[in-house]
Amino acid sequence: MNVAAFLTYIIITAITPGPNNIMSMTHASRMGFRKSYPFNLGIFLGTTMVMVLSTLFSSLFFSYIPKAEPVMLVIGAGYLLYLAYKIMTSGKEIRTGKMTEARFLPGVLLQFINPKLYIYSITAMGSYILPHYRETGILLLFAFFLAVVGFLCTVLWALFGSLFRKLFSDKGKLINTIMALLLVYSAVSLFL
Image 1 (cartoon, rainbow, N blue to C red):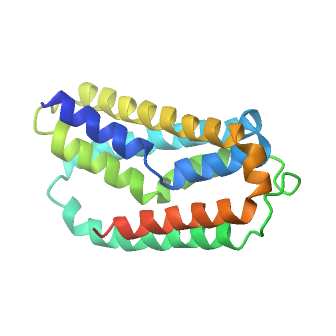
Image 2: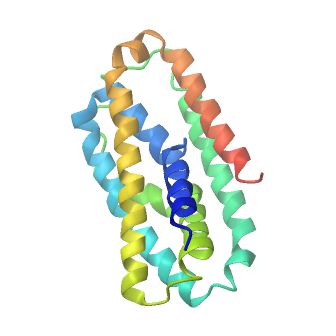
């Protein structure tokens, strides 16, 4: 396995804007880092669950995945556009009072409809891991490793959001527009 290419792929994929990173940053900018943490823990659990399921599925049904990918892309892109719309229409001010907590369960459930996560997992497994490893234990370790890298990047985005909370409050409409455009970019990039 080309370790450098593998690490480059997973870090770039995990750190770039996607539903987890943008929602994590949005929650932290509205409520602060500590209050956004349950949502981030939910992301981690959900990501780990999806990674394990995707890894097992990929190793068992590797030849059937390309047939499901176009449907998954359309559904995922639709969901990203929906999130972009919700952020764009949330008002020109980022209100801390309206959102009082970032809950654990939505963070978990988001992962099961997160197209970036499926693409991240399937690509990492199909391109880097499955050609070299087939033992279930090793595959599960890779799945957990991918989830940890994703979680660390999500927490980094939350930290960024909480550090720039004042800026986000003053420039709420601009920030919402940027977040929405990043989600639109994420949706469009699924087809590029």
